[in-house]
Length: 378
Image (spheres, rainbow, N blue to C red):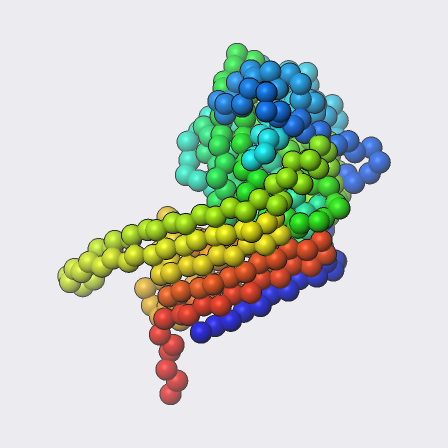
């Protein structure tokens, strides 16, 4: 049995300046008095629900505030955006989700490409969204979507200036191609955004648009500054969330998943088959607490194109984590010096976990049993 406790207090460490690039977006917006805020429109009970089809034709979109302040970050920061490449963003919030609407103009046909999940790159038109529901500007959940609806998502850590692509969020994407560009809707459930119960800090949000057909142009939702330490230092407040968050933070939800995994193994001419029955469950009694449990999680939950080691499972595996038990609230364990590497747990039989978020401190307690064999010593 292996218990592990992680407690993180809000202490900022210095970080070196790094050159920005798309996959990380080190520097986006300046934290200055010139910054503006996103304003969310709260969907009323009498309003027509938002159909995530990318059309932006519901009446609520005509009521929501439009954010049109986008500026170039690369290939050169600053400067004016050509009128035929202008961008507008809107945010609508209901009792269950954020819905972000984007209207992007372009006189040239956009590049639409299919790819696997998390492989969305700058060779295609795309939209990126970063949300920090804790308001600390330490980390943010992000979703990048291509015009084919393919998603790259995970957690961005400001101190390390790095992305963790392990978490997969249950977002919905709708895209409509137009004669003069495209429009997009992204629905992001509030239940997938962990935050403290009584935080007084406003949510933060940032958007980016990649346009490879215009000399690899990258636009960000504000005045670009390529000298910022990381883009979280300059994300913008998301106003209009207080009423919805006050209601949602008290809601208790639960989810359970039962799965069966079958394998066929062919080794040195000998073939065998085996199966594994597993189950997982989550219960957040309110916004700042979540408890989750797992039984026989599938060790094969890795990236589909990453080689899987067949040696001793007790050794740490250099593989992306995909087991949901470990990915829950991954930012709590994602310290500047990682205190816990989940791939050292080679074959977990069961696990229990509780995670709490405060305004200045987070804590997570893990208790699990690992059935991987320990290498013998001579």
